[in-house]
Length: 363
Image (cartoon, rainbow, N blue to C red; front, side, top):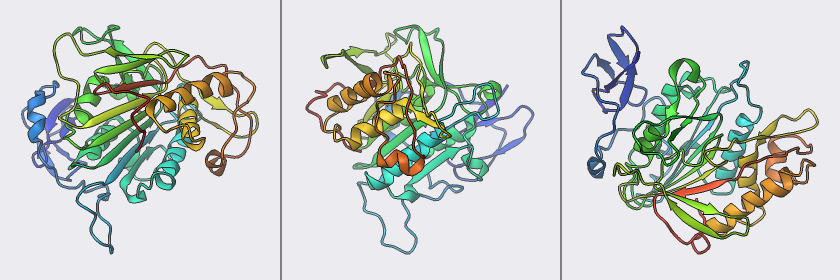
């Protein structure tokens, strides 16, 4: 049984293995001796308004530092965390997740002008042990993503891998289940629950900071535990569903803005787009997200969501490879037809409601 302790230097929550007398923090590199375990429940939302500014993470180069160049501007910085897990050599293996991560990085760098140094990639292909997508490393990377953010910053969290559900006993979930992400070592270390994701990368965000999450996983509709879900029908008509917990626990931000695109509804599963030749695949949701941008259908959040759903139904769901593999995908993969038959509907959730056909989409 792991015990949660706070780092003695930067106060990041750390998992102390059974019997361990000390632990090194992956964020600030400080060694913490055994301390009083902290409660798993996050601190009240009001405390986030005075969030401590942590030092830059020691093991990972600070994305806000440009060696040899001029210092970055005070605001308007970009930072991204990209996680792709294939679960290779296990019975849970997925084919397209690492390709998803590579495609998303290419999109952010070349289309949205994210500096490569501001993107942290966690995949099984990484040689640095801190960049393997274990539960501990994903947790540390989520803290890294929001550290020191300030007005004007744009953050992105992309995850491609397994998602799941577990019974919720607090009454905070409309359907009675918490949504989860499955790290590489989830069978031994457990899953990352939506409550923790919300407490780590949603609630701390101050006013003027924008976070987009792109989650390509099963059961991912409300995996950020955001208060509102955009329920859209096939004609494009929509209503906002209120998913705020009956307990009154605040699931929004500390003034920032969070919008999440997810691969499917909470009760649905997400699929790979498998190729017929020697090609591997990509996640259907990641593919549709990139397609919407490349085809010029991402003017607003409503047009973006409609385009993604249309691609799922028409290009991938037909089972005949009707989708065009664009220059972005073909640069990273080789050619091939897409097969499908998918039953999934990408979802949009947010920390506050808005007119999805009026609000411009931007990263």
